[in-house]
Amino acid sequence: MPKNLYTTFFKRLFDFCFSSLGVILLSPVFLILTIILWIDYKDSPYFLQERPGKDEKIFKIIKFKSMNNKTDSNGNLLSNRERTTKLGKYIRRYSLDEIPQLINVIKGDMSLIGPRPLVVSYLPYYNEIERKRHSVRPGITGLAQVKGRNSLVWEERFSLDIEYVENLSIALDSKILYWTFLKVLSKSEVAIDQDEYLDIFNVYRKKQWEAEKVS
Image 1 (cartoon, rainbow, N blue to C red):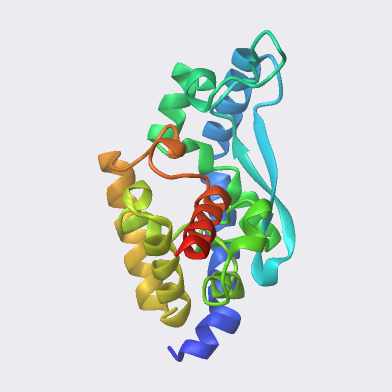
Image 2 (cartoon, rainbow, N blue to C red; image 1 turned 30 degrees about the horizontal axis):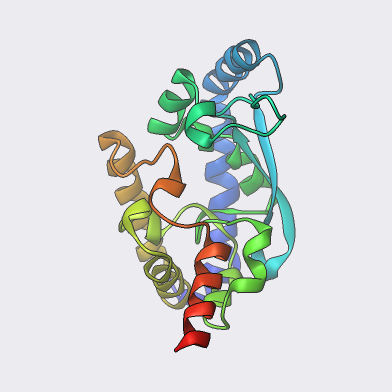
C-alpha cells in the first residue's frame, strides 16, 4: 500500500474501525471498572487532561484514574506513589487505564499508534526537530513505548517519535501493535511513577539550557 494513501486515508479508517470494535468488545470491562473505581475513589473514575494533538491542537485525553485525590494537611496533593491505590497499580500494570482513550481515537483526537501525547506545559520546551512529533496524531501506543518506554531518556524518546513520523507505514504500525501486545502480556517496563525515572521534561530542559549558559 502506498505510504501517502495509508497516512491520508487508511490509517484513520483503521483507527476508527478497530477502536469502535474495541469499545464494543471491551464494554463489559469498561462498565465494571467504571463502577468499581467510582466506589473505590468516591469520585469520578475518569482522568481528563488537556494534551496537544496533531499540529499541537489541544484536546482532552480520557483515562481511567489510577490515583486518588488525597492531600496533605496543607491541602497539597500527595506524591503519585502515595496516591496510587492497589487497584490503581493493577490497572496500570495491565494498561487498563488506557482503555477510555479508544473514545479519543474514535473522535479523531488520537490514533491507535503514534507518539504519546504529553502535557501542554511542555510545548515551549521542544526544539524544532522534536516538534515534528506533533505532525501526526498522537497514539495510545508508539515506537518509544515498545522500544524502552520509561528506561529511555527524553532525547531517546523523541528520537524514536521522529523516527516513527518519518517512517510511518502500515508495516511499522503492525509491528508496533504486535510489540505492544507482547509487552502488555509480559507487564514489562510499566512505571507506577514515571518521575522516578526522569525529570519532568520542562525541568529537564531548563537544566540543559542553564548548563549551556554556564559552558
